[in-house]
Image (cartoon, rainbow, N blue to C red; front, side):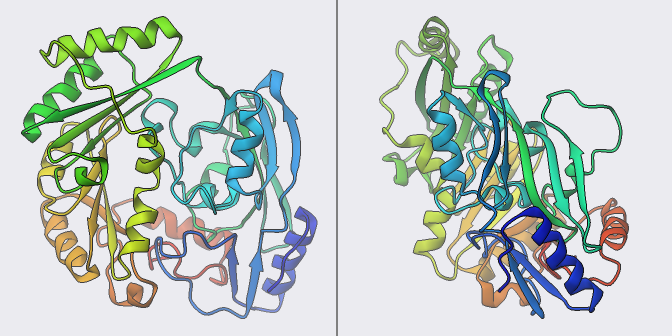
Length: 382
């Protein structure tokens, strides 16, 4: 295992391995080893965990530059001291590194308001198999227009190059927050309320939907719509009045569990810890399609109801594979996002990659023409 201590050593390790035709496994803290595909056996293993420095932090400019191996929780604690944040809410946040969060394009409940890594990263330095360091973007929110190479690294699972440094634009922490849990007997009632919230003057930072099979984890037994309000005190107080009007109720349940959103962020890690043969399916859809997708799940399921990402939780990986097969036949854009390591080669993790997959192959060939880096990590297809 090679553990470079800086960007130059990382580039050298990649370049030396590639020059000798050695296959490479690239990893951080391996917190998401059950995610996507399994890397094929490799000649060389490179870890970025020793690249753990904060290189530049400008609180007044709302920017920070950190190395890829910095633990995500360390980053969030540092920023919280100045009431700032990178609001990605990734799963496995307790053990993930910055590079792992970015390479897997992980996000959570606040995706609806703040976006994903592609919206929050303003610069990146990455090492190529030629042994070179490439700088994309910088430390200002607006950079010169052109091809942003960093965007290719986000969600690539380390199949193109090694992320060394990431520059984020930061968001100030809100003055006040409040959460609301809205129970509904029927799915269409919950969707109607979701539609009214999104069409109203309210702009919640998160709005998640849980089906009855998932709500026992949060003390419920119906469809639950979780709404997270943030802003100044006056705007947050307005939510109770507006939500009561939208849902035609005299009062809105606002006694949420103290750890509601952290539990929603960690729903996937907890499920996988408790279900050794479990698998998690992800479906990407439009807001209009979300009702049909959620109705198709008989297992525990939750949705980022304001951004169109749904997750289904299967206790057996074969049940997940059967569901995905039927879902693809219905036109759902779905992948098996998490699955047992020993089963990955027998599963069709990404059954219908779409028309742009050929472009992805060409990009892979540009960066790694000999197919040396993290082979199979991108859902077994790249």
